[in-house]
Image (cartoon, rainbow, N blue to C red; front, side):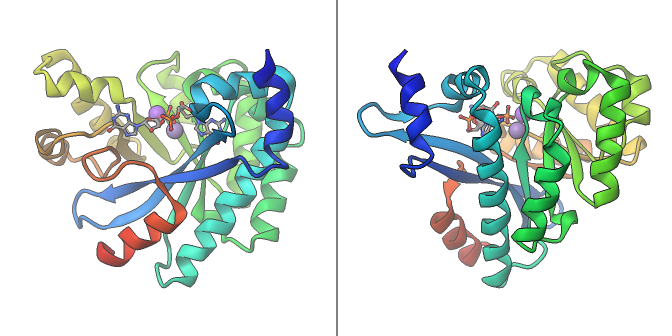
Amino acid sequence: LSLEADLRRALSNDEFHLEYQPQVDLTSGSIIGAEALIRWVHPAHGLISPVDFVPMLEKTGLIDTVGEWVMHQACEDCRAWHAAGFAQLRVSVNVSALQFNDVELLGKVRRAIEEEALPAELLELELTENIVMRDPQGATEILQALHSMGVRIAVDDFGTGYSSMAYLKTFPIDVLKIDQTFMRGVEIGDSSDAAIVEASVLFARKLGLEVVAEGVETRAQLDFLRDCGCHLAQGFFMSRPLPQAKLLALLRTHP
Ligand code: G
Ligand code: G
Ligand code: MN
Ligand code: NA
């Protein structure tokens, strides 16, 4: 496929950029951080979704280089939020299965936070349940190493994979991100989805984890989450993913 060849040049041609989707504290209403989401503007085909090109990055092995670029760029942009006066804002970075299995992962993360001078506690890595459950023992060691560096760990797409409660209890994780499919159910009045969200929030809170609801598109969903005791929300209702300049503009009007 020609896109594959294009991917090899995309990085040096500056065709990738990151967008940031704010995470909002449901009690105070303030933005506490943002998730970095990669975008590829192809010179001929325009915007291409990571759903389509991340698998190609993995297949070609380019995910290592691109993933490292993402990590550095996210840390650099997060530092710029701080420099603009928004101290303590966190940045979340998605990590694919292959990236998690990269023996260089720890070194790459350490180098990114050191070179970009970002306090480690302000970097969060998002991993799906399936990634950590593939080899729970091995994953525990890597997660512990990341944790001892100070980096936070979030379980992404929670509720859609194959995690076991026994492992969630022992993994050194900080955050559960409830998958957006459940919020869609909440919106159409699906009582099972509502029960899953409610139970997930309670589960997270009882385990001392922070909990984020994803895919919040309406005021009703937000009110429901607040009633459930959910800490944070992310979704189009608050903000779509924004390029760095637009995020900074939003922060200025909505600190
Ligand atoms: O932002 P969007 O909904 O288009 O993202 C689609 C998917 O791509 C999501 O599952 C997201 O986790 C993934 N994704 C976005 N950015 C990155 C990235 O920088 N690295 C990896 N590994 N996955 C990403
Ligand atoms: O798998 P992951 O949770 O990383 O995927 C995040 C993706 O969800 C991003 O691509 C982002 O663009 C998308 N997204 C974020 N908020 C919403 C929302 O409110 N509705 C919908 N449909 N998608 C969203
Ligand atoms: Mn994510
Ligand atoms: Na998710």
